[in-house]
Amino acid sequence: MHSTKLMDRLRAAGVSFKANDNIHAHLEPGDLANIQLGAEQAIGQLLAALAIDTENDHNTRETAARVAKMYVQEVFCGRYAAPPKVTDFPNDKHLDELYTLGPIAVRSACSHHLVPITGHAWVGVIPGDRVIGISKFNRLVRHVLSRPQIQEEAVVMVADEIERLIKPLGFAIVIRATHMCMTWRGVRESDTSMTTSVMRGLLREDPKARSEFMQLIAGQGY
Image (tube, rainbow, N blue to C red; front, side, top):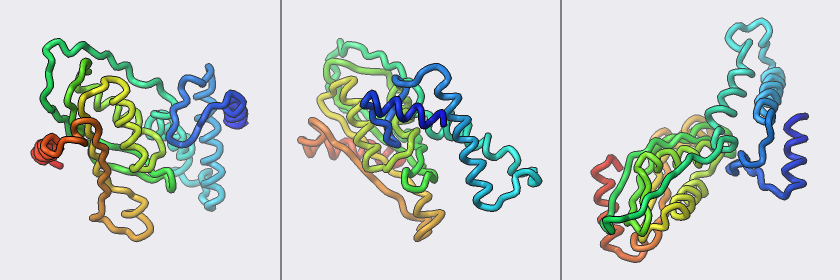
């Protein structure tokens, strides 16, 4: 019920609340607790629908509460938490050489089956007028990926966010991940991974810069 009221409020405000949206700016005090409580109740109903006796099975007695907390506070926290604070700095030294960062841990969930997506991301930057600390790339990747996602959209969302913040002369991101919707169910191809990439600016236009990026991340475990 509480989530229904929240969704009605978001609809009335014209706010998108798709699986990979961040709705933090539109949450009011108590909303997050109500989301978690509603999730706990719904997960309890799911377990009952699966004919699991949570009253007499000590292994699943608190499962609904644990799963709700996990999704709201951890797995899907990128939907509800404020974006990480990212302070940018002037590029006083006029740095114009490519630098790369990776591998960055990727932990997400497939929005089709809500099962894990795990892997790594690599980024490359040719700085413009502004730069950010390297740890902020990890935080931004985590913020975007900690939502129900499909990898093809997630890589673009991360690229858009980083490009918006620092407006680099060149930017690239590559994500390689394993999807449990393929390895745990369905075709059960345990050795299959998916690679997606976005190239912007000089790293899209200049084949030499793009080749340099690929060579550098090859030395970082790509």
